[in-house]
Image (tube, rainbow, N blue to C red; front, side):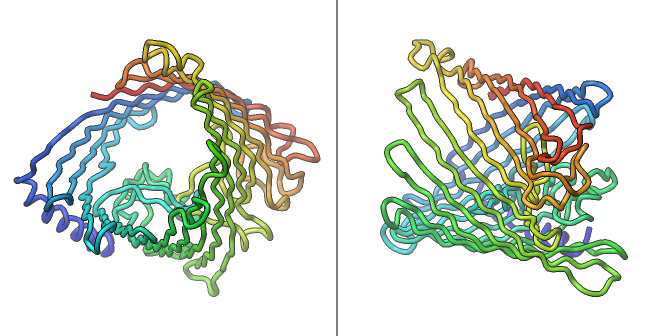
Length: 430
């Protein structure tokens, strides 16, 4: 473990010790558990046989609340988990371990100070940049006119199999390395200012993020530092219709150990989403979204997200150099039934079409055209049926196909055929 991880582990231990002392006087203590399972079958020509996968995750959630004064308090949360999968018989993780502080009126009437310390969910205001668990400290101040957030986190103590902080070639190479216990070591700082419902009930959020690679690189390995600045505007358009528009600009500097000179990449990620709700029409909901992640000019101008993720439930393509349009519709046809379990049966369908932004840059996918070809990547169609049998027991069946586009207008060669996926999920809590 490097010195950065050691120092942060010591700081995290100090926080845990500090919050554990008043725990003895806690006036509220609850616990619960969850079991989530999934089994999926993937069928594609590039697979010799249908690929059958499965996983089961059992987790325990422990919560303790310590009141402070009349309205404030500290909430202690712990969520350890155990995961079995067909390619990894055991994975024991701590998904959350935090102390959450709430202090109303700390700076006058109508103000609230909130803070989190420990292992917590950590995300950027705009989609497509960062959404991950980190060991972090997160402070938020709310006033009637403005909201502010300052946060800092560290990713080097996350287990390698669960870390999706994969920004550089070295990060990607370590993803499948069983000898690598921890994930990539990176420090992340975030600042945000939000103006809630400033005009016409529209909320404006402006933010900046810095990310620093803390790994010790060997000859030939690369390190990557990056900075992001962006804005989000969201709010209602008319009754039942809501929108979100977001844009983020990035600057990433890559250095290869043993080579002179750095490479700086400027990137752009933009998204727009419209969501329409009609509770009176069988709980109908419609969503139309568009995204763009730059790749113009090759590697020197691609957008590099902090948490990598993939695009498409079936396609699972890298997010760089992709644009897409998505339309989804969901409803509950038995929403008027007397039985709750029947009311909660939910149907949904999603269709998305993907494009290459830079057609001179090949996709990182099986059967992709070398570098030329057209902008069309393909279309993905999904259908899902969910059934909440009881308040603490639910199941879902999902199926769909990815139809790659080939020929002169497509990004794949004729060797890439349609790919199919069927999955069954279940969740229970106690």
